[in-house]
Length: 246
Image 1 (cartoon, rainbow, N blue to C red):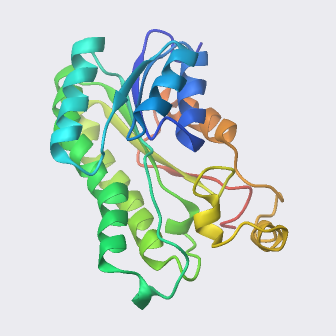
Image 2 (cartoon, rainbow, N blue to C red):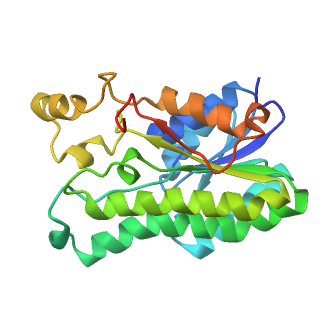
């Protein structure tokens, strides 16, 4: 029960890595707000783990403001924020990615971190405590070809994590990131372009441990980094990638 008595928001919590993190947090004693643009999915997961559901578009300031207000009015105090919601563009030459797709990737993967900080950092500062976890990617450390602007958005998230950690440390707030390699999530097909045995094998050949990340892997890493056991850890971008970035 590493998170007993704590409260948390997990964005993108209705599926994939976010669902794994939400389930792990609940199993370790936290009360979790499962926030997702997919309201039905969020409701299903929240009911299953005894949490609270919330619909949010993390790229929209008014929506994030409403999420923050909902969380604080529901919990009274927020201890953990997980910025997990993310999106990618399809693999293609960098110059072929449309402006619309570029804007969407940066809005969901980067602007969202700014928006949640804008609306929730004042709360953490008020308590002089809190843990923020950004779900970045190995793509931000060791970029894959043809995912250029997705890679860049995750590199931005890693730099933002370190900058946030330095600024918020005097306020008792820790900020870390995890860098998953691709996993069995709804985004896997988008990363690979197509989901075939051949493309899977090619992808897996770049991972020394020989398997994809799982939601359970991310849940375990996130639980540790957001727990009091990691009270001396801030500004870290932990690779949870089976050796992909070696």
